Image (cartoon, rainbow, N blue to C red; front, side, top):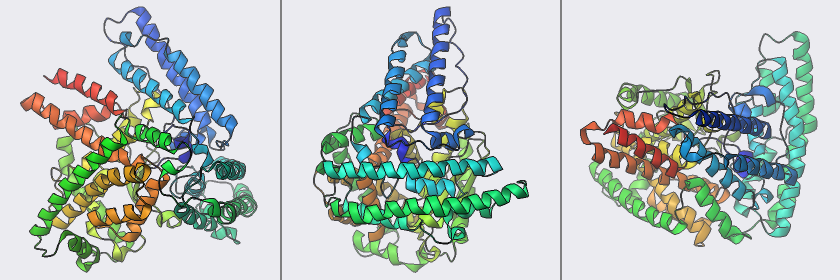
Length: 600
């Protein structure tokens, strides 16, 4: 999955900032239309400037370094009110434009902008602020990623080092507000499940050290560039030791103590979000937000059941192909324990196996994609401090290419890393041509307004990444039945999500029942299933976006293959799909139908 920050999620925004050029106007556009298009481009530009100030962590992630010392207290009512007035103001301004007079690309911008602002305003009416972070996403974890020196925060100059200290000061204030919001949630009955809080406590205590040089946040000091003056090096080193011992450690300790002594006893024993006040409305919003469709939870649940059934039949074929005699459950068990499926000795072996996958698909990618990104790409092991609770993920590069796109793989023990974990499909999804192609091409497209260059819609973004897993055979992968079984396992995993996410949040399915259902239908360990199910408990609806989006992209491809026959070009289809960035699925279908009409 692509990494996003919780602050952005809770505000209903997953976007960022950078420079923009306006679209060339269509032939025959009137002077007034041209002015209107120019004005609208300015409107988008102003919005993006404001959004970057409101969400400086996101600005940093997109390579806009103007706010690298800032960390707003986004848990306050004042901050939410500021968002509400900002979004409403831009929505009112957008209403002044006549959509029908706009160019095709500006119509897409108009539709996305309107959809986005309306969705955010709806999200601000919900009570999610009473649960400011959880074990999967949230500022206490993001701080570790940014401040380790291995993430988005730059540490190249003395100013960069000073900037980070500004964010450290902001974090202490943020944490006090988070505790206050949790307490209001405790009074209102809007609390996280106990099972999640138990996982959050060690994440906080892991940051508590007595020796500052042993802190994760000392990482940038260990890697201080040569070009920084000696006097600055000395001053910065002292400042970092101070910040770790007097601000970061006490803040993490305070959060950990609060969660353990006050919050855990009041956390809920129920699994689904329906158990809290407004829970049912919140889940309906989450489903709409993450799938960008009007599909009902029930519709999605039924799709999940039929997909699970279909993929199980494919798995049975692989079991027969490799000559396994027991039932599917026994086959899953053997996949988890068979030593020949765990050939690696050290983390570097695992990383090299992923590099080999990249080398295999490289020649075939050229037949499927006319345009590929310029942004560099790297494969890295997930940092130790978050590896235990992390999934493999993609962290986007910066638009100017100065920071590569990174595919992170958590490797807790290389000797137990199993090839049937779906290594080939995982690489296609998280790396190439999945997230790295889609996100990089979008960021690099300077003809898009900023709010589109850095937009994120899980249904299309994760849907695209899951769709690319289905390209494995066309790309020269899945020749080994065990790797193909891993790919089927990955697809099954996304189908199961439709069943358990809706099941937990609308049908009283318990955490334990959901874990059991997952283990019955895929080769996953109990620990693995538990981490996944707890993630869906923490972020209701997010896990639905993958399969819903992938099914829509596959449906569009099949539709145009039938409509266009010999005139259908897979490379052109992929290029068209990616060139304008992510968007809600209904907007995507309109755009792709218009493209197909030009191909005839």
